[in-house]
Image 1: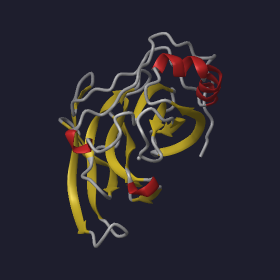
Image 2: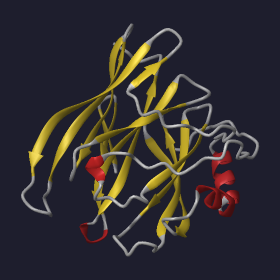
Image 3: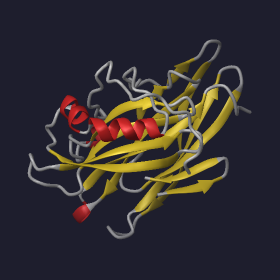
Image 4: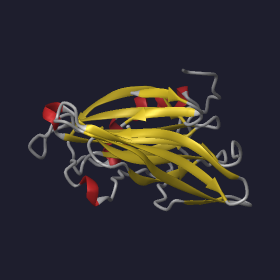
Length: 240
């Protein structure tokens, strides 16, 4: 799903190393489901959504994804995954299938039902859940002495021939510093719909963010499915 390109990665559509280990996480501020608010993706199931969980001190971010595999009658169960992403090189470190749940299930019920596997998975990557991460919808990131802006540039469009060869759009994602210049974060290819910026989540431990971009993936019977492309960005180093 991800291919190396230049400085970071080429991400088609949404390893392990030594990590510090935390004590078992405590759900202090109760996380909640979050869905992208974007009219471009109204054909996707509204219940394709995430629960942001937490960060490690070494740039790992985890979240829960609820995602449909096929378009079904409302009320049928959907797949539920725990996912950890290394924000240093934008690699998915691990994906754990939790089970299948109703699209109407609450975040509280998910966290209680799968508490043991969520805690064990987070601890194995040094991820703390002492505070509930919030998705910031703006593109500007304020640091102690700088202002940074997340940008997205369409660099290539290839027209499709049919449903088998749908064409694609290629985007360059960058982070611009008011004081230090800019840097390329990643290149993303989106096949069916234009790429959409969702927001970012700031690590409580580092000057680092997880930026979220949404694209369209066609799964079972070519029905739309939300794909989350998570791109990490160091807010201090790497600028030119």
